[in-house]
Structure formats: C-alpha cells, structure tokens
Length: 158
Image: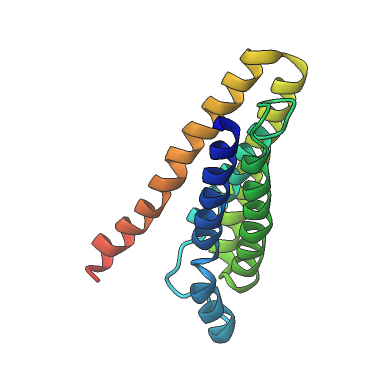
C-alpha cells in the first residue's frame, strides 16, 4: 500500500512540476516573436536548469533508490530548461549573453563536481545525503533567483 501511494503521489507531483516547467512558454513565445529578450532575465532559467540536473541525478537508482519519478520529471525539466536557455541566448544582447554563458559554465561545473564527488568519493547513504543537500541548496537558490529582477524594478521604478 505504501509503495502504491508513493507512486500515485509521485505521478501527481510530476504532473504539477511539468505544468510549472511549461509556464514560461508564453514568455518565450513573446521573446521569439519580438526577437528580443527585452527586460527579461535569463538567470531563473539557468538556475532552474541546475536544480533539474541535480534533482535528476539525485533520483537515479545508484544515488537514491526508489526515486525514479524524481529523475524522470527533472530529466524532462533539464530538456525544457535547456531549450529556454538556448532561446534566451539566441535573442539576448551581447552583454546579457556573456553573463548567461558565464552562469551556464558555473552551472555545468557545479553539476560536474557533484556528480564526480558522488561517484568516486561517496557511497550508500553518504552519496544520497550529499546529492540531496546539493539539490536542496540549489533549489533554494533557484527560487531566490527571480529576486534578481527586483533590482531592475527598484532601479527603474517600474
């Protein structure tokens, strides 16, 4: 019974997460139509990509057994967020493009370090704890990243 409930709630959670991942499609449709990122920030999409990478890694059976649904939805999130970041990079001004590419390099470095350390230095529950903490820390950062827009709002008073 417990396994069935775990699965059912996992599927509902995945459906909810999928809708959250797809929510910015309206923004990106606007970016494509206007051929400009306008005042939009790419930071939240890059940080969401990191969150999805780390969470997908955490859900893999050799890291955290019985959490495959975590990997499937976050793997889907990696694909969706990668598309958003690519679209943003195509239409961003040169200065913003450089900033986002730098942040993307940081994201890939963090994920690589977490994956490398978890494979070669940790085993069992220590691996699961390390990957879970990394995913949690960067999840908090992901949800805080839209606050970077607050600086623009305060600066422009709009």
